[in-house]
Length: 115
Image (tube, rainbow, N blue to C red; front, side, top):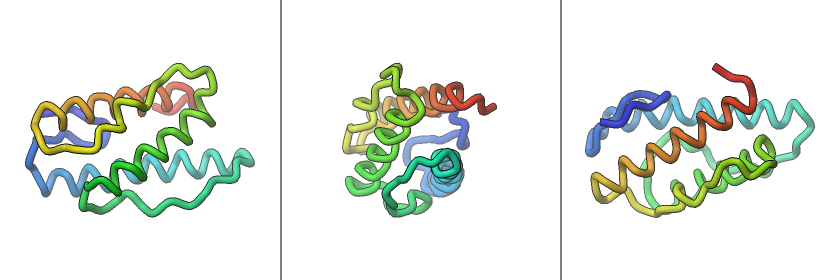
């Protein structure tokens, strides 16, 4: 199991994944609002709150994180390369990706002073 700020997740748990997707998308929406409220003009990307989690979803998610890193972490203190893995087909890849995502969100939240 991966412990996540968006809900704990087990590999293969589709119901848990849907809950995770919604909570995770809410955090991305909050980042977007913070950026826009601070005068940052952002391109619109399709919502991330529903599946399937496929190559398209992972690419849109990576694009979002690359954007947040440039806006909120201009010191290059976080890498997004770990989020570029285009698969959750194996248990180790699933957990490694989620840990990298947790780390990225923790760093962004710290930079923004969010709990």
